[in-house]
Amino acid sequence: MNNSKRSIKHYLILPSYQLRLVLFMAVVVMIGSFVHIGVLNYITTKNLSEYFSQNQIEQVWNTLRPAIVITNIFSFIVLCVLLIILAIFVTHKLIGPMLKVTGHINKINSGLIPKNNLKLREGDEGQSLCDAVNELQSKLCSHYSQLEELKSSVKDEETAAKIGKLLEEFQIEK
Image (cartoon, rainbow, N blue to C red; front, top):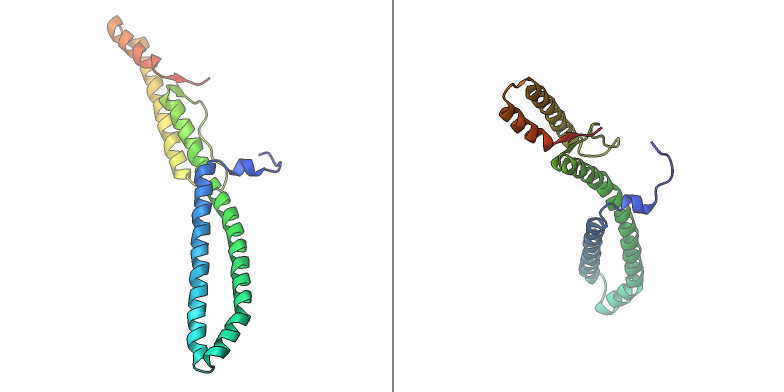
């Protein structure tokens, strides 16, 4: 395998999906941050009202509010960056193999049966799907060979022509 450094373009296989996922995660984190501020405000106000007057609570809140807001903003930014990185790597491991399998199946569907089996990178998801496609490809190659043998052994020219027409639909990659 090539050990050269990968650029971000190599990890953005399906950018629209990956970026939508990151945006969704960022919105969830933002909503969580607002809920956190609201719950913290509610609990703090409720608990502090037992010990302090309303004026003192406002002073405490005015003192703590900048720290809470800055902490939430910082947490939001850090979580978003981590989620972006996580989403890109996870979707890369999921989408990459699916696109590779789709391309392999499309090649078979077009009538060209690849000579080599489909292989995924180590650690990629979808190995069972890859194995199923390889099994399908192997069976198609086997059936193709059987049809070729049958065509050569058939004495009736009309039947041989029909088998030949079936064989023309597919071709094994050289």
